[in-house]
Image (cartoon, rainbow, N blue to C red; front, top):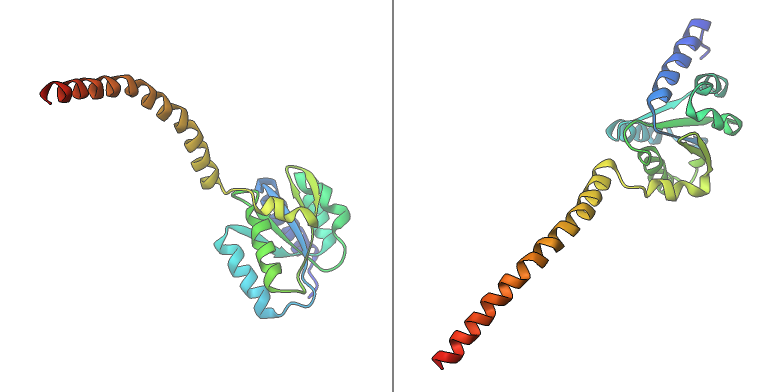
Length: 174
């Protein structure tokens, strides 16, 4: 189905707006997928708060021009879909990596995080990044550990004194 000029401008504007707010982008080849598989992928993307769309490459290039994802322009060849992470850099990468495991025909072409282009080989590294909640939990654990150790260190002399007095008392009663 062909789009009118106004329709193309609307698509470019929509993708550019989402791309300006996105943290990372993943580009994948969807050749050979069934309609049901694409529907499942779109549903998974909505649940993960990932913007997933099949857009013509020329329109995607124009949408990515003034964003961090302009580096993906050379990789936009053939029938591709784009996935943009809105919450965490690893969301889109994790979603498409998991989908690629279940579907052999689905092939990840490239990804971009923070304006840097990465090859499809590095999808595992990006997908394994912790989510925001996981990162905050790890940070809180690291920040809490020295305080707990200080509290145990300050508590140790008084505990040792109490044990010593109790041992002396037990020795005198025996």
